[in-house]
Length: 285
Image (cartoon, rainbow, N blue to C red; front, side):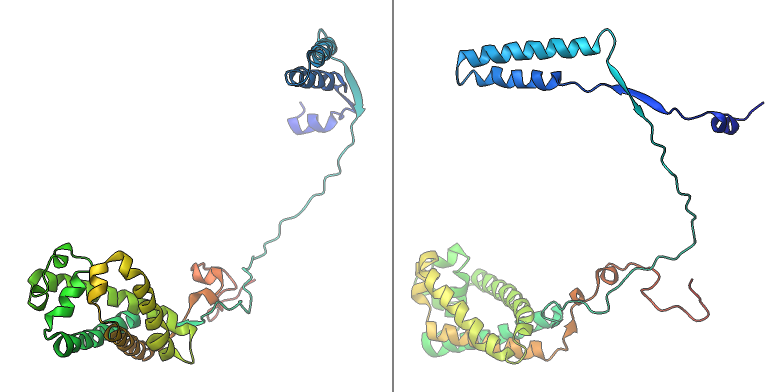
């Protein structure tokens, strides 16, 4: 008895195969349908012509399919099959020797921004208290003004009540001052590497000037009562003190290289041959 492999080898492949014969009737049917719908926006005669062509195309196509489909014979072209062998080759991940630099190449850690923001908040609080004692005559005046930025009850305080202590206003002003100072310190930590030669110029002059100018232009629309009580020279001085102290604290930390300059496979933690040197006694093929 012959096996299946032997029977398949003895069987000769057909030299010709039959496929459906090409016909133009589907195109006639499609063109007739197009004219049929085009007549809806043009003329009835166009629709009548389209209906006639669509009917002719449908009948002609039907007669070529039923009862027996028209077929043509085409020769079979044998495909030469190339036998390939599998070899044991270790694929290595290609890592470019040089990666395009993403600026800044070095940046400060997050902890540096937090420490700088907290240190700057102390400097700004000292100047605010000095303003309250020297200009307003009460240390609680700037604290109540700061709380009035987000606390509606502080806005209802009378002129004399702004100079007295209020526990709720003090708690809100303290929390707001710490949160905003920390966020601005983080922003300073991210921005200072953009000015590596003059970091204090950015932190102590440029950023406070931009921030103070923005507040001066919009605070009259957001909170007119608060804008009328702010002493802008002292406010700008406190912002400059914050920027200088925060910048000095941030630049005392050692900048770390950014991981964007490493290749993607290394940043993703992919372990593959070629990324790390072989261990002692290990050979790679």
